[in-house]
Amino acid sequence: MAVSATLLSEIEDAFDAMSNSLRLFDERLYQSSLSISLPWVKEPGLQKQIARELYNDLWHKDHQDGRKTTTNYGLVGANESLIVAAKHLNHHKARLKTAIANLKKSELPQLHEHLHKRSIALANSLNQTGLARLHLKQCYRQIPLLESRPDSVRFSWYSSGRSIRKLSVEEAMGRLLKLDISQPHIQIQLEKLSALHQATPLAQIQQQVPVIRANFSWKTTDNHWQRQARNCPLPILIPLNEGDTLPEHNILPTEPPEQRNRALRSDSKIDPTPFLSSLRIHLYRN
Image (tube, rainbow, N blue to C red):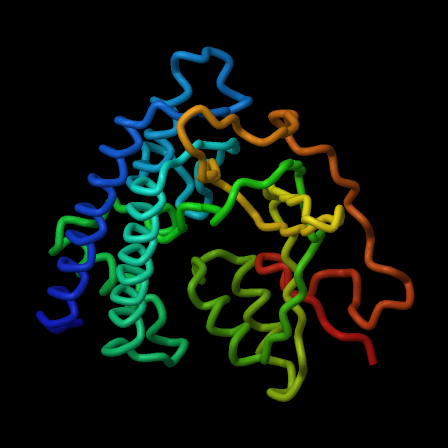
């Protein structure tokens, strides 16, 4: 399936702009003498090197699951020029994300029987531009930064448990057809799904992966606290002047605490037994 030269050119231009802004950001970080704290990096002399590697990590590694991203947390002291460079980089990351989204939706059909062709077309297009090994999620994610230095930062492992997405029979069929339909267990599920009325609602249940969350606190002039929280898969840029110290912060264990796999409540509207086990899709109870 052909993809227009215009869309490919937009991706190439966006990637080049993102790469150039990343190079400038990296140079300014390399030149910085401000404090860095990456609690999982035990050797102080490696803190800046590891931070730079994290920010520059854009490509798939061998055997890396494309759905997963590398994660590390911490604080990086940043002067004004580094903050400005980070904002420019974030702008171009967003521009690249938009360009690839345009490629996905503009010229490729949306019907479920062609979904597999869409992914092949996208892969072929990225091969043409030399970007097939690009880890898109790691390219898109923004450099986290603050506009002012907080008085304290508290990191925590956070999980919202599970997400429940309502699907139609047609949507479920499209997802099932993307699997290996030569397999007997997929054929059985296709037969089960085909027997449902088209208006039957379905629920796809997805366990959420724990993420690192940062809670920032600023002490106000009237002796109260202003607070802010966000997910931070990368070290956060903290505005500092020469001689300033990083805010007080805690150290996280390297692994999230064990989560209990909570069963669906007995009064849930969702049948706890998966209807399509390969896709974690359940029926709603009558």
